[in-house]
Image (cartoon, rainbow over all chains, first blue to last red; front, top):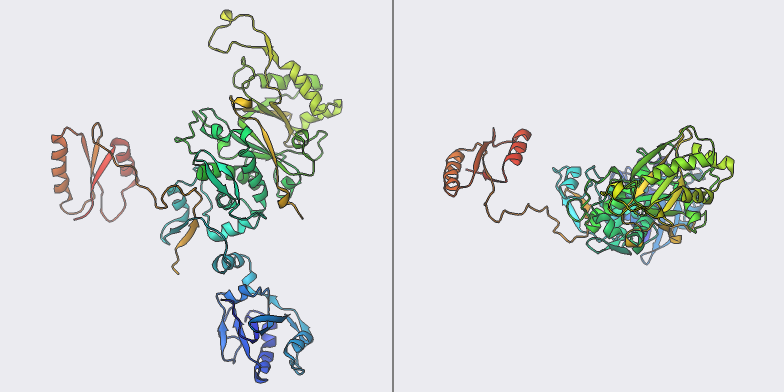
Length: 479
Length: 94
């Protein structure tokens, strides 16, 4: 539907003063015997007094000819565009039409107005309708009397909270957030072991409430979750509480407006909330990992809706988690941790790093079972007011970790915690934490001498999940 | 074009697109049967006969009725039925 007749074509709308201004010029072109097709976008009777106006209310012709401004005059030969004049620039119109007296009464130049085809909301509708958009997912038609949000519930697509209905327009817009093709397979998603394409990720990102600009982070999260060491299949199936906790590092976190400061692990920030939720919906919908089915969690925890926050790198004296894990500070990364809920740490009195480290260690000891060692990894989230104590003493993360390693040496409890103390042989000493199993990040608001531990899955390490970090693809950050 | 909304399937498409009915009961052994009269004429006659047949087979039956066939069941009634019985037979039309 992209065939223009030879001669001239002009795109106009009544709601544009420049189009109204050039109306007499269009009559002059026709009076000179030049074939002129007039495409009108908003009112089929415009321009007044002209015959043979082509109705482009669907904006299909404007879409196919990349019209961004009205009026735009095209010269067509052999069905191909040979030149265009955008807005009213008299010299350009004279040049294109070869009519020396055209628009004699008009000023030399008037800028045009936006074509209706590029208005927000319309551009994506046109792309879906006329643009051969390579979206291949099954179409689900919802009757106009059906409630769209309820329809998503009825089909089992939601985590219990409402989702944004994944219309083609919204999915197309989401796909503009990545340079990857919709049919690219990102990985094999458990538990159903099905191919997870960029398109399926985009659909679920729409439902989660993501903006298109979050797509590079969502894609990195999915790629990270599918790294074998992370053990997503076991994680989504376990009777334990854990599910993916996402920690975002690097410039993209700030650019998309993630929260690393006050209430970083709480509600209220769209990027934090929806990037984490997108991964959960992908596991649910693409992978088929649903509670009561393959997800056998005994109690679950609220982080299974979404658990995603950024490290507060701004003003930190510490290397970020990503830098510690071998990435460049300019790279944006997603670190995935098989984690549970938030265990707060209260300490408003310690003013030395040794004392504060001791406080941290006491909470870390309680992970999963206070007398058992090496069962769960942890993220220690240090708030700025606590970090300041270490900063003032010149402790980097390694120094803190070294201190914690010593404080976390504890009697290795009998593997059967039901035995009473008197039954236990004097145990050897062991480290509470698995080597490499303690991640330290800085986040939180400026006020509050509180930090937090996010305990992890009891199947940690090679027998279960190892934290992984995935960088946002360089294909997404070319600019 | 109709005004129907088109959504894109977010799933792996391993299951049919249409909403699935709950699986049918293989047998009524040990199940409680609800008989729902939607208040259409002579629906009660039909359900009375079904009740006799179920009871002859030793199946426990509970009776319910909607105030009017013209509207969906009130929430309270729907919740009561869901809580009390395992399957429902509905006298749907006259």
